[in-house]
Length: 242
Image (tube, rainbow, N blue to C red; front, side, top):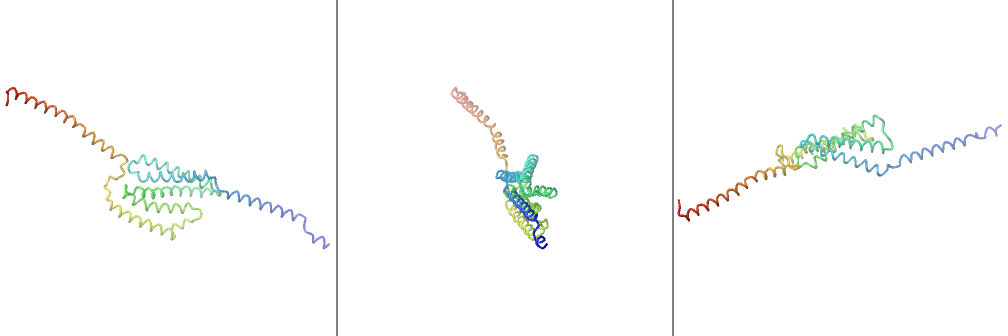
């Protein structure tokens, strides 16, 4: 009886084998999940990011010149940036977020696009719009940091009020007062800027058009003067001097 009871159950090796196969399948699944996204997809995603941010930055800075035109450009830039977010965060991501997290990512990405646009546009065109750039740069720093923390899956929103958030706030304040002082030194005239967009050419053409009409008068005056001189000379020769 003891020999019978001491023998192992015959099904035990089968269970061990089945458990090993399941573990191997899970390992293969994890290796497939860690496979990087295609190069073309990653390239397209990053190009869309930078193109969208570039369109937004240009629209934010140049908006006072032509509000209707640059509003359209800003909307196009937002759509391009959101398309980049969908490609990078959903289509190419190994772990797709839940619906609530997806909505937060899209909203934070939209905010991030404007923050980057304000920062890059304010720096790029600071000489053209000093007063506007002095506001856009610190605002872009603050907005982009808040948006990035909300978008980052590995950070909590409480990090906004932490030491890093305080450092970003101090950087924005220093940049505002520093750029404000530089803008006051440049002395931008009200309603004018060095960013003409072809307006100077039109002004010079108008002056050229205005100055052209007097030319015929000068030419017409010359024959009259010469004609009168010849007439006086003829009268003098005839003895009719006055």
